[in-house]
Length: 139
Image 1 (tube, helix red, strand yellow):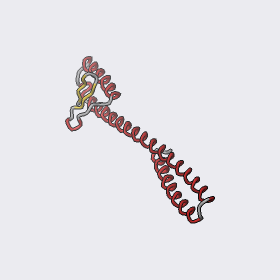
Image 2 (tube, rainbow, N blue to C red):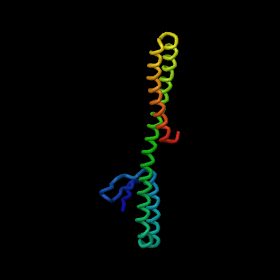
Image 3 (cartoon, rainbow, N blue to C red):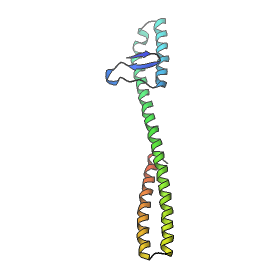
Image 4 (tube, one colour):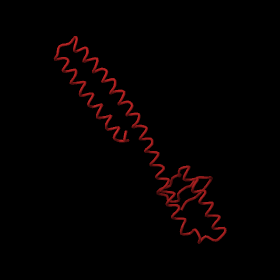
């Protein structure tokens, strides 16, 4: 069962004692008032069987809201990571272009191959990271 006090729903189970989200708490308060009205009009037996089911639904709804919030935070972090990876990728791409231009006009062929290989590996790593992040949230 639960206790509704000052607009906040507290679960009575000591193992899961927590404060419900504001949206679920508002719903719980509305349902609680309706149950009180029904009990006053008829009697307690009218809602006796329904009350535990409603409490379970509200607890599940609160859990889903909490999970959704966690996913939203994770999504924001992934978006930030993606932006950083794209920036790094563009920077390394520009460095590679600059190195290739410099190598083609100033450096011997051997140096150009070494620099190109290094930049190619770095570019592959960034591209794989970008693909990995994009696959996480369908981007």
